[in-house]
Image 1 (tube, rainbow, N blue to C red):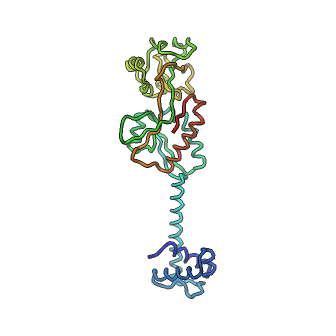
Image 2 (image 1 turned 180 degrees about the vertical axis):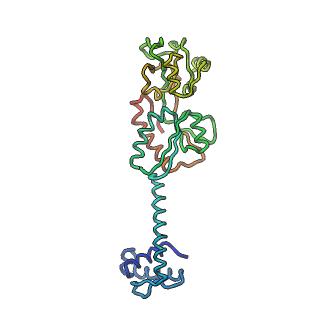
Image 3 (image 1 turned 90 degrees about the horizontal axis):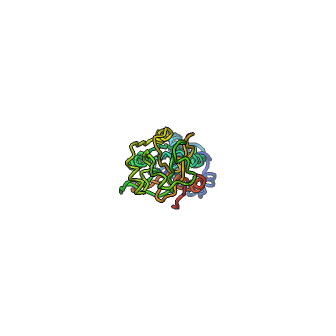
Length: 301
């Protein structure tokens, strides 16, 4: 049976032209190298060198040398590729994320992650929390960043951050005259525009009126356009209120339960790829640094 070790030894002897120099290069004894060549010739079924001096190859030796070089080169290339994948230097990662995280947290994290890894491929899919969970469950994304998924044994949720909700209104709304953080009583007469993100708020008195809203908008850009036209106010997490268009204002609230937990969604039975595991660790570190300036709280692992 031909072995790669034997082929490497043969190539070294053929290149050096003698056993002594080959043995020194290989870190082996001359007798061990000589025995390896005899085993290789026995496996092949013919002589590789024209004499014991190993300076001239036979026709079989020349043919074997050409094929051995190709075999070793291909094997070494495969080993380098496997090691690069294991060291998360190459590979592909599909991330599904809610838009607020995709817009305000992932660009910076990906810039520092991909900088030293130019051969990585990353696909970013932004969607609402339900869609993020479905993409992870279906395997079209390896990791998801969103709110807690509905109960399922196939998905695992690990909290990443806590993001408080804010009230978004237009300049001519009566709320604009209030300078302090808003309390529940301030919103008693407000007309709400419902959105998917605020469905996570666990506040009974708010949810009753919020779910009765006549207008439901899922796309954030469209939602903000409706608010700007004075059709009502809406509730959005802090991350979604960064860089609001002119004419819109985001106000802090002073009542409990107005927050969401965003976390990492993965498939329960799936072991993460090296690049996914490395990115999750990098993202947690990046989040810990950027969270305070953005007004959100990074949660411990």
